[in-house]
Length: 333
Image (tube, rainbow, N blue to C red; front, side, top):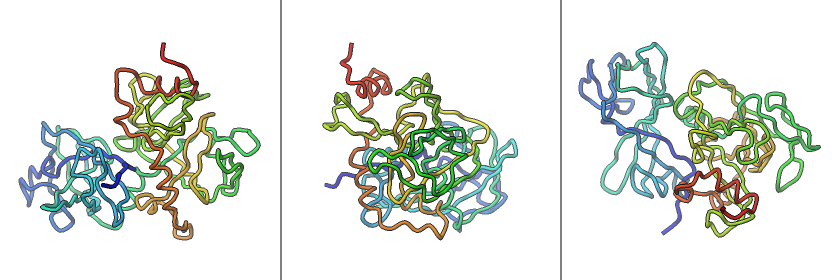
């Protein structure tokens, strides 16, 4: 049985948890493009709880990954449509509808790009398939938040918003490398887009470091604290949230930047090693047409091989404390 290491994990609701409370399709669940009517009002069921849908790039497309709380490993995952709904306070929220197909049936799941509340009704405003890949890319891309200092080839640090294509950054494995492309956008910092803040001093960061939830930090274990059997590991920022020194920041807007090289690189942000943008089927939609990276299957495979799954971080002790100790080679007191 192949190892299906999760590349992404998104909080989703079963489509039946979001049903029409008033309108043409009263009592119907959130559906695909042909199943909905603009103007219908949807309500999230009071007892609805999100469950994590973990995805990896299978041999024939997106599949459910190991450890997913939705579907079974190997089930096919299809991005169907992006619905835009108006919340009770007048803000617009995009909802991505994903189909999960197993041997016996296909189920639909809703991935909200902002927090949904069981109070109030959400009016369906628009639906389209063209924007869906781009909206998924928004949350799948690893992004640096404005103000984050990256290390240049000569060792100096520069805020990400002051960098330009062609600037050379220091990489761990290949020395100075020129930036091939920089993506920039302003996003609402809510739900799946809310960044993770790592406080100064935690995991050896020189200043507070803010990353997208799926951004992976590279940690070299001087002692194999996690029991992975290897020194080099990648750990998602979202898996380290402890509510104290590592938190999710909800609210407002953020300016985000995606840094692409000719290959997947480990670079330095606020003094610690983190990854650059890895091109996958989920993130490719974020790239302009004139930026067409070649086959990077080996990059994806190498990154998946050393990524630490969330289950390996479970335990009584804070994962950040364990990883800091591992990087310093210290034994537990």
